[in-house]
Image 1 (cartoon, rainbow, N blue to C red):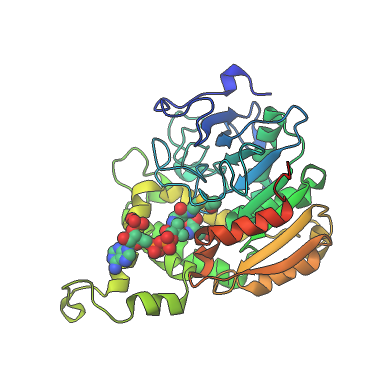
Image 2: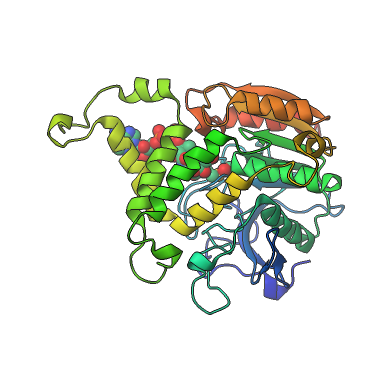
Length: 382
Ligand SMILES: CC(=O)SCCNC(=O)CCNC(=O)[C@H](O)C(C)(C)COP(=O)(O)OP(=O)(O)OC[C@H]1O[C@@H](n2cnc3c(N)ncnc32)[C@H](O)[C@@H]1OP(=O)(O)O
Ligand SMILES: N[C@@H](CCO)C(=O)O
């Protein structure tokens, strides 16, 4: 169980009280270094997490929600101190919602390698300085190992449900494959058994954009007052196009210029302004080093690695599973969810989330995600 020294309400936590309807934000510190797949170990592992609801006396009501690449532990509730964006799954988590917090104990950790409180490149390393470029290479297996330690500390030995989309789906799958006895039900959204060549290619372009920024300094820019903002912005522009669909961009922006700007005289098209906006927002809230570490972890994702291949690995899953993808997702196409469904003996799907918004559909179409959750864990009839 968590000891008082392992639990800390963050300094700006006045709003985070016992029983706060928006959840409680705390952190967990692993006592020993985390062994790494490629050799070596990561000392000082700390995970920030938020919880909603209460753990039942028989510990049967825990639900794990795993965020995507640039998300964080704040999957529901408004933006506030320590969580720069409002939770995208606000419609999913809360009293009377599909993850009814009067019934479920919902836990959402910030991923290991991230930058919203969990240990990552912007954290202080063993030398007393920021980890920066010395932060080790991580895989989903390390991230889930840290999350399993957190579950142990919370006294949660089984999860009634594990939910994740995209990168969160990779970790949810890793939970169900590596610890099948701890996962009763599993919802995999817009994710894959292994990162494809094209997914690696898009991420590779983004990694190059960040690393070619003159302020990258091999990842050791923290504390210098300047970071690779231009590179991170370029990476986000590229990523954001892959997160949306071609018909959506055409319908929303077409060939229109941004306001009174003239694209023939150095001005922007409206779609360019939209990408500028998303780039600036990410630069303002996310660490480039974390973006590199997490993107590389996603590129490494291969559920069958050293497990006899994907089929053998997927065959280990015993959780009641629903697999879903987004019909307009060009980054994680439905064929990948069909492969997951075919490989997981207990899986149903692939269910299709109808959305014009491409890969981001799993974040935007909250009602459809809620319906999938309800299918796996029906509301309490009482
Ligand atoms: C469970 C979890 O995984 S939680 C983690 C959630 N992940 C994230 O939050 C990741 C970051 N965000 C995103 O990926 C996406 O923004 C989403 C999916 C969350 C939101 O998608 P949508 O709601 O469809 O937003 P959309 O792409 O339309 O962008 C809207 C923004 O673009 C702005 N915008 C629209 N057109 C233009 C334009 N021509 N010029 C400038 N800005 C524009 C809007 O003003 C709006 O700004 P705001 O978000 O600052 O209010
Ligand atoms: N837009 C999402 C999608 C990544 O899968 C994010 O930034 O987390």
